[in-house]
Amino acid sequence: MDAIEDVSTRAMKEFGISKELNKITSDWAPVEFEFNIMKNTADVLLVKNFEECVGLTDEHLGMITNLNFSP
Image (tube, rainbow, N blue to C red; front, top):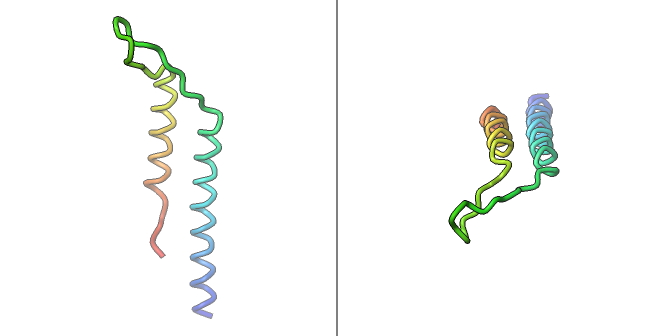
């Protein structure tokens, strides 16, 4: 019975991790990085949609931090 409970607990944790990682992947899938050339330069690019990227990064960092990876 203990072995079954252990396997079940691990499977539930793995499912939760997989679900969160799938959400992160689907959130980033439609994001297209857009760039502008910095004024007075020919080779420095700035991310045009920087706020969107930072917002997603912050949200997903929090999600990953809260995942329970321990067995």
